Structure formats: C-alpha cells, structure tokens
Length: 243
Ligand code: MG
Image (cartoon, rainbow, N blue to C red; front, side, top):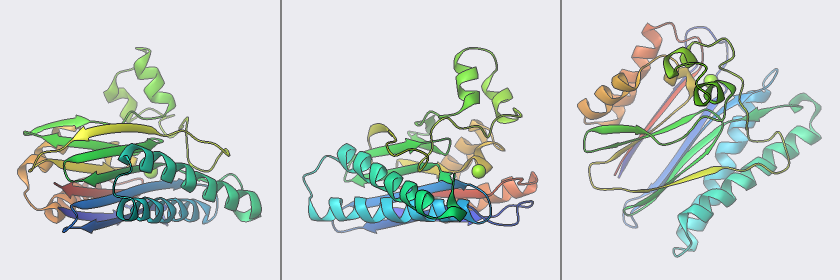
C-alpha cells in the first residue's frame, strides 16, 4: 500500500486552510488517510481542519490497530463523530474560533476492505480497472440543484454559490457522516481531494492522471500543476492511495 499527499495554498489565497494526514502499516495491510478543508474567519479554518484531521486519524488508527475485528464502517463513523465534537467544542470555548467548521473526507483500508467517510464537499474517487467513479456525494447547495435537475454538474463547478455546504464538521454537536463500503483489488487507487482541485478539473482529466501515472507522488504533482496552471483560486489538496 502506498500513499502520497500534497497540499498547496494555490495562487490567490494567503493561507492554506486545508489539512491532510495518513498512516500505513504494510505488515498488517492497514492504511488510513483523511483530508479536511476548513472554513472560518482569521486563522480558524486552519484550526478546524487540523483538529479534525488529527482527531479523526488518531482515533481511527487506534481502533484499527488495537481492535482488529471492529467494522471499518463503525470506526469511520465514530472517528468522524469524535472529530466533530472536538471542533465543535473548540469553536464553543474559543471566541476566535466561533462559527468555524471543516469538511472531512477519509479512507480506511484493511486488506481488501475499505470505507470512505464523508461530510461536506471534499471528494473521494475510486479508480478500478481503469474506470473512475466519484464515491462521495457533495453535501452542498449546488449538488441539491443538480439532483433537482436545475443545473448540470458542469455548471455546478463554476456556480456562484458552489461554496455553500449543507453539512460540515464542527457546526453542530451531532453531525452525521456518509459511509461507503468498497471491495478493493490490487491495482485499485483512491483519490481524496479538496474542492480546490475538483472545481478545476473534469472527471475525464482525473481519470487520465490516475490511470496514466503509476506513482502516487507523480500523480499528485501532475494534478496540482494542472490546478495551478488554471489559476488555483482556492487551496488545493490531493491524496492518492494505492492498494
Ligand atoms: Mg476549498
């Protein structure tokens, strides 16, 4: 299992409010990766995304390594709920952090089993047999407009209200995550990314990079460069995991 992640503040923003973390254990065939895109005034978006990523990963990793029989879906759900509570608590106690929140997308892998956990509009994609599939469904206003047939997915990428998300970590005491189960095969690849990438590239371009570039690091760098070449108005974070 190989994982590589990269994060860049982009060409316009003065700070990077995205965070990511990952861990792998080759011997036990375990991997966990998380990516968060924070929002909030001053530095609070950065604080929200780093608390969420750190809390999620340490909680999930502890469960995966110390309780090897637990269902990955439960691990993902509970770790996300715990991350939510930590961000909510900090926002509640610290006036500087009031109203902060973050997206969270994560993948947990044990052998051939994987789950993707999602809250917000960061994305998880799955490449299997050369075919790419968006696993997560954005919790966003524009996704609802797409679902209702008012706009197309292409129009959604440049919609003026595309930043409006309908679920985020840290805004309420309880927050539910979507959980997707995947059966991985050798050669499969998972991509996690923030909207700073997905708003700038098409699914075809993602597929081309993921299926055409063997090394996760080279793949991440190529996609980041594409985002930068297109003006990267937002922070860009990309993580590739190879089964
Ligand atoms: Mg973003």
